[in-house]
Image 1 (cartoon, rainbow, N blue to C red):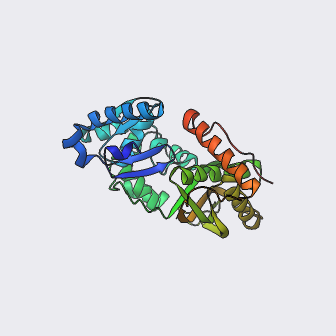
Image 2: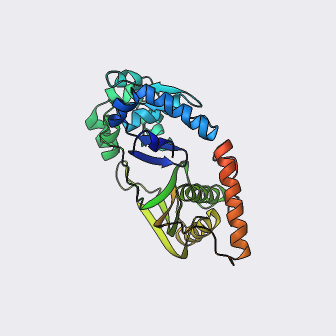
Image 3: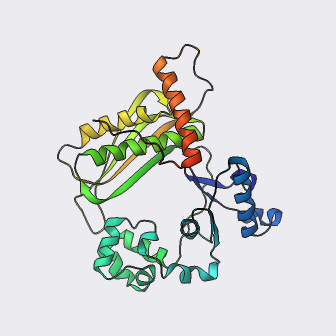
Length: 301
C-alpha cells in the first residue's frame, strides 16, 4: 500500500479513505505538506488515480480538510487556525451530525459550527445528552482520538442515518445491499473474508434526548465470504425477521469473524462461485478506476 511507504500508522476508514499519523515521519520526508505532495504523486504514479489530502492536528479536522479540497487537492489546517477554519462551516461537517441532528440544531438557530461553539454546553447536553457534549467539543476543534493502526481488524462495517424514518421498502433494501457490497469490497481489498454478518438498526422511538434504541441481529455463515451478494442475502434475511412493525432511522451492515484469504479458488470450485469471483474482480477494477458507486447491485426482495 502506498500509504505505508510513509508511515506504519495507517487507519483505514473505507475502501478509498484512511487516516495517517505522520508525526514520526517528518524528519525523514519533510513537512506534513511535503509528505502530502509526495503521497499524491506516488498514488498517481502507481494507480493513475487522483487523491485528496487533508492535513490537520486531529482526525476530524483532517477529514473535513480532505473533503473540502476534493477531488484532487491538498489542504492543511494548522493547529492555531482550527477554530477559525471550523466556524463558518455548516454543522453537517461535524462527525455525529446527520440530517436529523442537523434539523434539530437548526430549530435552535444553530446552523454553523461557530454557532454551535457559542452555544451553552449545558443546554446542548440537556437537549442532546452525551451527543451534545461531544458536539460542543468538536465545534471547538477538540478531538482526542488517535490514529488506530490495528492491522488485525475485528470487523468491517458500513451504516447510514436516513433523512427520514423508514419502514420496509425499496430504499431500505437497496441500502442494505449497498452496505453489503461496500463491506465486501473492503474485505477483498485487504485480502480477508468474514463469517459473521450483523445487521444494526437504530429504531425511531427516542428513549431520552439524543438517544434511540439499537437493535442488532447476526448470523454465522457456513463459510467465510468476501462476496457482496452472500453478505447482502444474509443481511436481508435478518431484516425480514427483525423489521415487522418497526420504524428505523439508521441501518448498518457489518462482517466479523475475519479470516485471511487462503489464496486461489479450489480447482473444482462451483461454477457459481467462480462466476461471482470473476464478477467481483471486475467490479473492484471499475470501482478503483471510476469510484465505488459506479456499479451497484439491485435490492433483494
